[in-house]
Image (cartoon, rainbow, N blue to C red):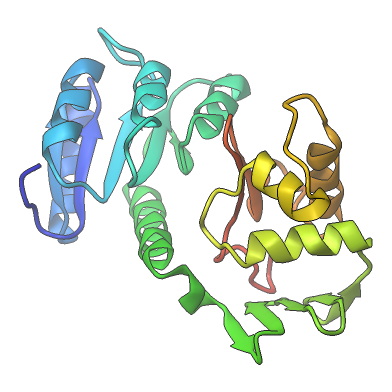
Length: 245
């Protein structure tokens, strides 16, 4: 890959007027923006440029956005923001499950797009040093904004309120929070909680994740605090625990 300045973005968009607008606006904000007008060209550029973020349109010639998203998932490590004019929620759900971090609906409002871009890049920087987002006290407590987990007391507090968890739910949360911004596989979870390998069929881990999300207020639309990485496991997000959530 060629070396590019930090804050480098690849825009994959076939609407040339919109691409010119986005490229110009983000350029004025200090970003280096490369552009591809179809999915195949976008994949080729993504392989040779060191990127922090890809902005990807879903409706593309040659290769559609979901196909591009699926192929990127196998190797791309940066942030991925989806642009969509589709009113079909399933397209957005599919993109998020394939590894997209966020989406913006068309017509694009430049300031909204800029805010989403900056938010994703901040999160990406935090992923590079995830434990810096948590305060650890005597190796017994993890704190992520309004979330406090104390393993000595077996106690979880969210926005000042004690959250009642089962023993297994607590162990699961501690495991995920101890590996922030890293995908923890179902096999790792099964080995840690039960001492056995995951058989590929048992749904008890998934059910515990659902229960944990509900108790931690992660039920407003798509999960944001503990997310599913399709085919891989679960991911604890460090910057989604602010009090106003």
